[in-house]
Length: 173
Image: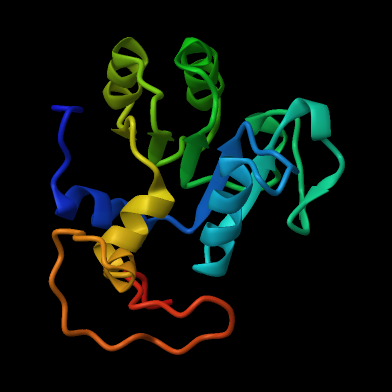
């Protein structure tokens, strides 16, 4: 797979099929990107599991924080990596030890490891690198366009009125 460019259908397919997301490198600090990505994904209806060994046993955004992926008590659909690229091989080892395997490993902006991506894809896991699910969700749902940013997506869909964030929503549930 070419990880320099992703089709909208690939990204939206992932965001539509996943329901549970483990955020490796989650922070309790509300000005950190991992915090507001977790909040955004929770508000969009995803079940989010923060992973941070230094915060394990405490809550982030009302969710219990785990020391490692294997500690999460349910199957994870997507692992979102908020760690340096040099930490990705270790995260990939953790992911590949899970049963069942997650469907997706998503590496945040600036995070890329092609060797780990190949290992994960060989095991049947979809990989996204150097992208943010919050940004991609908002772009594909047309929310970024609300702020005058050209998202490259044209839509005539009306927002789905929900509690919390209002959204055109790429997920209907």
